[in-house]
Amino acid sequence: MKVLVTAASRHGATFEIARQIGDTLMAAGFDVDVRRPEKVESVAPFDAVVIGSAVYAGRWLEQARRLIDREETALRNRPVWLFSSGPLGDPPKPDAALEGLGRLGEATHAIEHRVFAGKADRKTLGFTERAIFAVVKAPEGDFRPWEAVAEWASEIAQTLETRRLRPASPA
Image 1 (cartoon, rainbow, N blue to C red):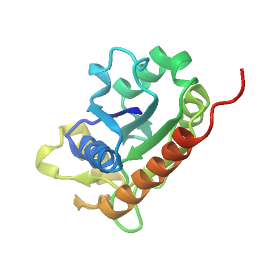
Image 2 (spheres, rainbow, N blue to C red):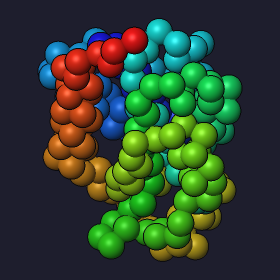
Image 3 (spheres, rainbow, N blue to C red):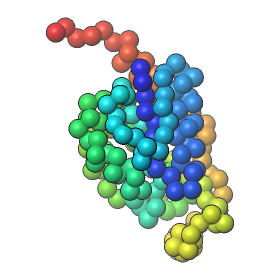
């Protein structure tokens, strides 16, 4: 079974989460391709898809939203999982609802959406990002929950394995 794992990431931290998900799925025996959304020509060659995005100002990055818009019909015909990365600290900040996520879930018929804490290094942020960072009083650091990411990827693998072993329905 061929699985696409893709994530839009401005500074690379969310893409590292995608790589962890891909590594876990590969270890479970799946043929996995991990790439950025702008490098995905089509989801047609894949049996399942995991799509993620960093969240800025409560929104997914444009590259991930554009992939879903472009491949909406094909995504509806395969199992899809969504993940977001961005809240920082404990408790995570910002804690606001994600704008437009309901539409993305509906467009893909996503099985599940997970939110993982993110990573922020002020030295890598642009002026606007630093301003938002200050306004929401977000802490600096790496808050990505690697164990939770691996557990979720394992749950995805179990679901896919169940689908793979399920007998074909009669024609």
